[in-house]
Amino acid sequence: MKLSIVIPIYNEVETLRELLQHVLDAELGVEKELILVDDCSADGTVDLLKLLEQEHPEWTIVFHEVNQGKGAALRTGFAKATGDVVAIQDADLEYDPKDLALLLGPIRDGHADVVYGSRFLGGGPHRVVYFWHSIGNRFLTLFSNMMTDVNLTDMEVCYKMFKREVLEGIEIHEDRFGFEPEITAKVTRGKQWRLYEVPISYYGRSYSDGKKITWRDGFRALWCIMKYRFVS
Image 1 (cartoon, rainbow, N blue to C red):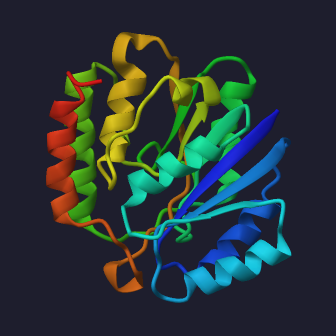
Image 2 (image 1 turned 180 degrees about the horizontal axis):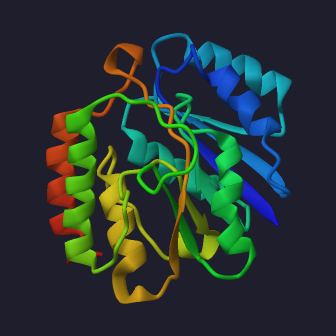
Image 3 (image 1 turned 90 degrees about the vertical axis):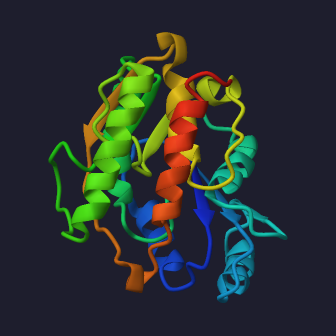
């Protein structure tokens, strides 16, 4: 089995090399394919990626010439993936790549087609950061569940893993953080795919650390939850 790990990147020069080392060190028991998509970073990340491109010619590294958003970067990365399974990994050290083994388990055991991590099911360490941010996440998950008739606990989580055939049947339209409710609506539509959740660790960042999602993205997510309840 080969796992394609798609890493969307925007202004992550301070954390990227450490994150990639964690990905390489994670014992997942499968072949790893790394796909890095830079979304027009302006902080030195591009120079670092060009250096990494020379150090690791086996990696797939793609550069967006214009900043488009996380959803657009994932769309680019998914198109490059050749693995049997595809996972999303942020570059900011909020998520521990060792936990990818937890997501892979239900797929490898033949139980799941899609697996989400959950920051709210318990599990490993969790950094205490923002109360209202967590309330917003839970509200968006609740509203998404109402529209999709599933019982997820963490729709907005980064860690999502898919069999490649799941993604091959889905067209992603959202360019920014609207990706999360869009992909959730589309993998749950018709209940064709078996969806599981597993508890994960979370080392959340503050906005001073470089966290990028804002309340505007929350309002967009609400719109996307309603839109993709009906739109393919």
